[in-house]
Image (cartoon, rainbow, N blue to C red; front, side):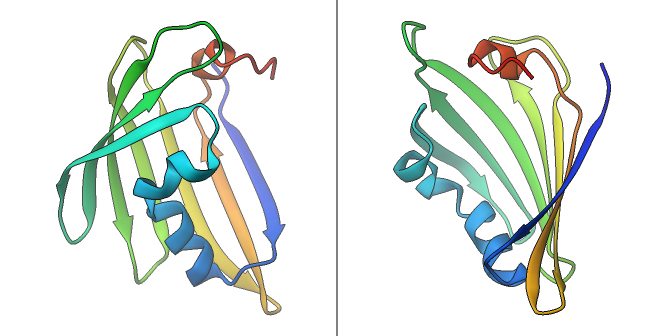
Length: 121
C-alpha cells in the first residue's frame, strides 16, 4: 500500500492542535463512530489505549493503539496493535506554526481500515 502525506492549515496554534489530538479520551465526543476510549496505560511520553468503534451495522470492534508523543517537538505517532484487522497501520502527526497559523502535517500508511468505515479513498 502507498504512503499518504497531507498538510492542512488549521485555525489553532500548533500547541493547541497537538493537545486536541492527544486528548484521546474526548474522541467519543466528536468522532461519530468512536463509542468509547479506554486508556490502559499512560506514561510521560506514551499511551496504550483501546478505541471502541461502532459503524453502521457492524458490531462494535476494539482497536488497540500505542501512542508515542513528544510535547517539546509537538509530534505524535500512533501504531495499531490489536483488533479485527491484521495489518500495519502507523500515523505520524507533526504540529507546526507557520506565520502564526497552525499547520498540521499528517503522514499515513493507509490500509483497509478506512475501507472498513465506508470511505472510498
